[in-house]
Length: 420
Ligand SMILES: Cc1ncc(COP(=O)(O)O)c(C=O)c1O
Image (cartoon, rainbow, N blue to C red; front, side):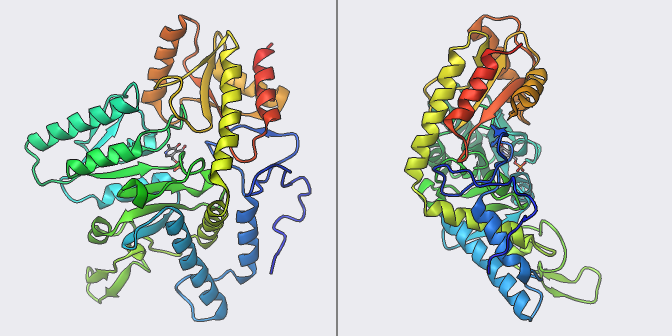
């Protein structure tokens, strides 16, 4: 059965674009802020609409509605796990978003774990980690990241911590620059030193296939709302042993196998349910799985090529504007996803963003993008590289996705070229 989700909103349309997910949008509104939250895929909206009449409890009822919802939830887990290349013994845990997933893993770390990360990470991959974590300086290129990690892990294994676990936590693609990190190489280095590796795939997964087994990554986190599934679910996927040994992320119903009469007499279950206490976000999980299923069946190479062409057009257009400076960590030709941050010399970034919105109906992000250490560093670097002393203290970010067109990109470039 298919139910129209929002029959009273005729302006919500699926634009006629070469986009297998049919992302929704509003005519006239140019959305260049996919990296913050991507628009909803028709596949996600349809999956939610189809399930809504059946909406009932998950894992808690014997009725037909409840059984169907339980099945839909567990099928969603399987679909998301398959899409991300989960190994048979990995856990696929539904969370609220990437932040939630990383906090969950942080609480599940065995005692004494050292987390090694880079200063270029989003706050979600900087702040949850325990005291004593190592934050490596932002490298100047993918090769530098690999060398720096190698040196840091060698030092850690020499220094007084034999036998204690180490987790490397890195992003797959930067939310500030869109630059891709050499995840497979970092995983090889981590494993050579006996460490595990987590990939924050919040920005990578919407743009490129991510496969845990192929990359040999131990854990992966992402957010549904950045992957065209805006119904409040994210996921943590990875090795079962630490997760099954850790205290439950939330204590409550669904996470136990036995609760006795005495105050603390409780046995926690193992498996994903251990960390999913309480009634789960069924619609979020189903929406996320619907997008994963649609993307799995799409020609990802063609989507990638199309996005890269749009990105190249945007970056070339920005480079041609003498008053606009791009932010970057690596060299200009480093592989990247459809995200570009930049500054307009002599102009306040919040003011420019407001002007783009009101005068041109273009939505971009401004600020330091929840990656303050990196964004500040890149602003300083941009001033040095451009030789300009009038760069503002915050930046603008344009991000692309499946619904972005050439005319969206051109509209932004024209607007930037004609700022009043
Ligand atoms: C690279 C990266 N990691 C983590 C997050 C946090 O995602 P969420 O806010 O969905 O938890 C973001 C959000 O922008 C991000 O870009």
